[in-house]
Length: 414
Image (cartoon, rainbow, N blue to C red; front, side, top):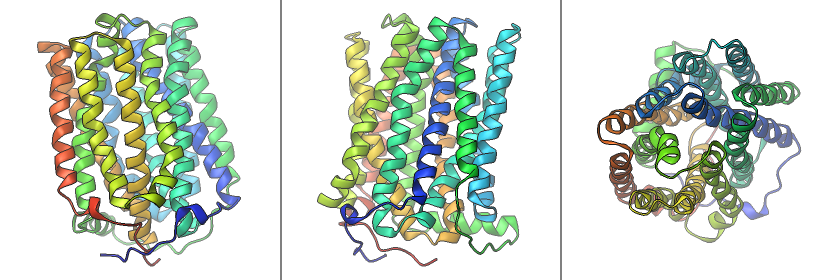
């Protein structure tokens, strides 16, 4: 196990070269959140989709995490990561422009929305795999918690504003405006990435199967990373089981408008802002493993609060549950990303990151389960099922050695 002697993140100063990456991340994450929040709202309000259809839509929008994460990781270790990220955003921009055109000419169905969204999410995955792999090349080890907090703060701003903006644009103007705004932000991200100065690195290309197995072996044989992967797998299943049915549940059971749905989900982003601002200081003040444990425990708390709305249908309680989820989940992301960046050799970071991104492949299964349970028994039963899933992932993580780390591990070799 790596030594636990890294310096405090409070003493680090982030280099200027990191700024362009942070701004491009803000634009890319904003584009993603506006588009993802607009898609189910358009499906429900414009295309008449119900629980089963929105569940299938969420399945299509999350399936790329299963089929594209590993190839994206190999690409991130074989190609300049800056170019991979720029290309990913260009793909997303083109996909969103296609949705605008289909809406404008009345050609869009929820099936087409899912198919084109599938392509756009492939771009999201490539960006998400390459970005954390690029950060250690720009930032010293002591600055990783602060750098990851800055990146995640941008994502939290997107989570806060994106769903609300998406909901308002769909409700006031129409789906075309929401998807067009997201496409414009993706173009901004491409421009910013084009000017980023990525340090050169040695790239060794071997057989693709060898590269994939090497990355997978590092994760599943590591006593710190393997429990994180399993926890992410169960967490994403439970979260997307809930998310698959939340829009129709919020509209029909909680009485929310399109803007209200977006604002409620957007409370996740508000919580993430708080969590991202707290993360570097928490990592410096309390045991590193304890910060990691906050995420799984927060998932349980949030799911219980949301399930309570089945008895007390309060939009405020629903919004608070998303806020709690946001605070705790961002602490999990920042701490576990920092863990990977410190104990994984740089030449493996893309593939190891892709293995953890592949944990999001549980999302289509969670969405499919939500569609099935929601279609047969209703949304309230889905909320109870999600709570059980969150309880399982928290128990698993609390039994692991990862949560017993006292400090950030030392940096692995190149």
